[in-house]
Amino acid sequence: MARNTRSALFETRTARLKLPIAKKPVFVRIGPKIGLGYRRNQTAGTWVVRVADGQGGNWTKAIGEADDVEDADGDHVLDFWQAQEKARALGREDRGADSGRPITVGEALVAYEADLRIRGADGANAERVRRRLQPALREKPVASVSARDLRRWRDSLVDAVAPSTVNRTCTVLKAALNLAANHDERILNRRAWDTGLARIRGATQSRNVILDEPTVRRIIAEARTQGPEFGLLVELAAVTGARTSQLARLTVQDLQPTGSSPRLLVPTSRKGGGEKKILRHPVPIPAGLAAKLLSVTKGQPPEAPLLKKPSGESWRRRDHTRMFQRTAKAADQDPAEVTIYALRHSNIVRQILAGVPIRVVAVNHDTSVSMIERTYSRHIGDHSDQLARGALLDTTAPAGANVVPMRASGVIE
Image (cartoon, rainbow, N blue to C red; front, side, top):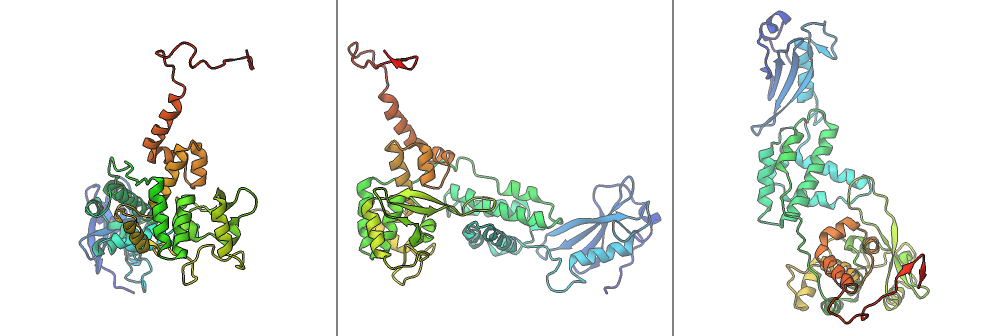
């Protein structure tokens, strides 16, 4: 048990009530890095604990009402000695290991990643943010992080990645910090990340790489030269527009090759918030590709991976990166610009320009209509222009050149 600290200002209610009413508490040191404060109010005062983080910052928390009016009950109303005990408990002096210690920014990301996986979502985004955190920010308690700390970190990313990537990265960190605040009532500084991690304006402008069909075919051909397994992965990415994380989770039983309309049951992604229920939606594929998939999976159990690496293992998130860079270069494309994701963008645009309804395109690619309209608006504009042009009234054309029948009461006269 730690020795209690004496304080003529705080020990008695008579002494405390002589202090001026103020918004900020007066503190007295009660242990290493721990201070106990008293804030004089119009009625009963408030006890506040302050704990230093060892890096020039601190966190504070109101821990109870002072016994200025009511007698102490050891719970909501505390005398000076009880307030010291509670402050030390929160400050970890009387607790072993890490119990009661405020969570750090790095630990908040670990907790958020675990929460994503429990909910069936993809925790990879949290890992990407964690890799970009500087050690000083990673070790800083969430309760003491400031808007300036976060703004400096956000701005440091601009030279390394695109502004839209900065925004996505900041969104993940904000979600992690909010989760930490939801589970620790000592964290009262949500405004710090609302301000410090504010989105960069104008960063939503799409810079997706769209490839024409001959280039896509050339990329598929070059991918096959690196091995049939990799060639099949790239071909499926180009034909279905699915994310590589979705393709990696395909199983043999997801292939439906029979009949004149073969298809794949593609698992939904694990993007977004909330609890993720992984479903599968049918995506059409050419008969030739279905026959190829059927031949390479012959004799495999239904739950076996549909696509495998040469080692027989399933593809993981980054296994394809360097191989696709070599493929893009061999196809006379810039590997820094053309990634495997360009095949997804190109497939979406190909379907839009082919007249496939936007909602169908969205379902086929496991995304939303609003996302497609926002990301591919220029290509949708090109397509709508073509559609509208066929119905234009051309007053310079000869009369009757573009007369179309009119319906009246459901009957064509």
